[in-house]
Image 1 (cartoon, rainbow, N blue to C red):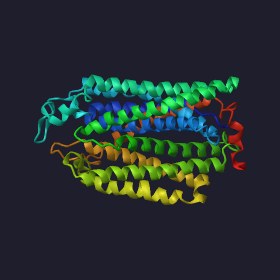
Image 2: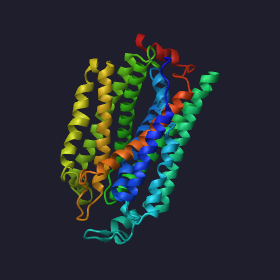
Image 3: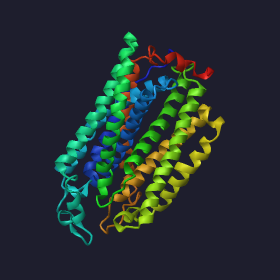
Image 4: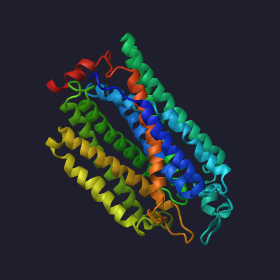
Length: 408
């Protein structure tokens, strides 16, 4: 590790705290937009950590050799999951301590009026889904989801860090068993979380593809961050001479694979709903063709699929740190746009029209504070973990294969 490279986790904690404080102020200034922006920021950042957890589990289940170095970076990121669970608490407070119980999830306020449909409490579509859309069950599921994710994050980190000390292969076997169970449990809980936190914002709507979409979205976010992290650590010194262009090529190739997968899932969702043409489903897309959401949907097609697809097809761009840093940043920004696109139009104005992104210039403050708050906590957790562990898993059975990956 280069002598001048000393991470400063406290800096990120302060940045995260500043974002959270601005969001807190927003809860009193413009409660609704600040609350929705906070939810968007939290889901965006949580998806990065969940994506990293999937990458760790995929590494173990395939017993991959090339990704041992990369896995250690993902292990730092997943240490943030318990803290992100704590950041979910303000959403509970806003729901019950504020003036409007349906401020985020409209179905929580049974007296809320629906345009031309009476109230939520008398709505047949709500009554049919009431077994799932029960408030107690909803908050219990949120606690359960974060508990499951935090447990697996703890287990993989414990095995990996303990192995640095004693070198025992039993930790590798333990991680493999955890990965087998974790891939199923995390997939189910992440799907349930997406139904609860995103889909139930517009509880009339439903999509069978949504769980797979949120999975692909999380992996893409994680791979984008991984490209940026590894390029940064090579440039600063810690991974110089350890992480090589063959490793970089493999991470970029995964980013390419999930670009295609995301497009396939997103198109399938659109096509199935368009083809069936059922009003209970089509309105979701109709809302996203209003105002600024229409050009944003075009940006996602060309900017989040076509451009990265053509870019990552080219081998020279996958083995160059500058070009992978560019595409990593690009994909992360597009991922955030996609999260906004999926969440914010579910908020309706007084006329029942989907909320427009820049209806008030001050909205941008709350958008940024929501992302900076949760993002600062993620990076604080990452650098805190980074400072306490070895730069690579030095006693992993596959570490020699990983370091020699370039020579294969």
